[in-house]
Length: 298
Image 1 (tube, rainbow, N blue to C red):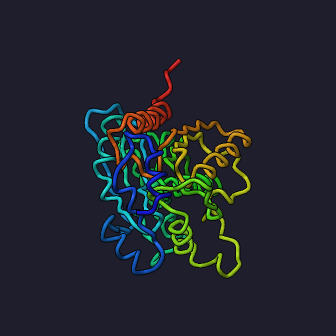
Image 2 (cartoon, helix red, strand yellow; image 1 turned 90 degrees about the horizontal axis):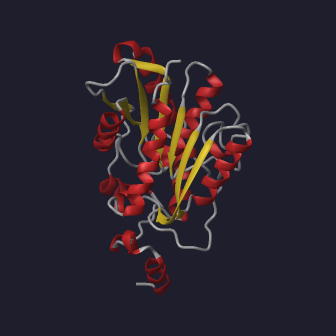
């Protein structure tokens, strides 16, 4: 065990420690991707899990949820419990998008999958008892990046409306460089590899990523829906989350940035019962609740 890794681990808040953190997994090539998919899972069917709770006030709001996994692993079906809880707690229709994964399906496949699910919800809004003006998007890590990108795409296409975006430690910028502190769970090397897979190698060829591929590269953020962004200060994505929140605010978009001391990437999956994690997730849930509560009739 390397001493710097152990020292960084011991600086982690006791409630968030796990021996798993001392065994970082590096995404670096096709072999490591196959291993990661065996461990984490891989969906990518372009379908979705839909939860419609009984007894809710109709029309209700709805939430589109995007799972994490660096755009290369994970499954919407693995988040069935999450969206079921979300639906029943908030009294809304909740959907987990099982978007297609890179490198087999690079940008824009995942984003277009999300757009297709949104379009389907709006088309069936009367059948599902949904208010099409109260549809929020949410996601973690790469899912947060997809939620942010979908808000930009929806704004520009002008066909539908998203009322709110909840971005949990979102993967927003392919240009992120490592800071001097240690990053647990998701490392700079894994981040570069995942972006290369998702962007289809455009950076290696010297070209700029296409519009909507990298949310942080979008110049104009005006007119986007209000946002909640949550991140830990031991997360690789801390600075890009802060920068995106500042740019949203500068563009006149209401934004709430929640920074949790000592929390690393994916801590909610490693130590879900830790008080700081429970408080973090409660803040996200409260933000969604406020956004999806119908206005009081005057």
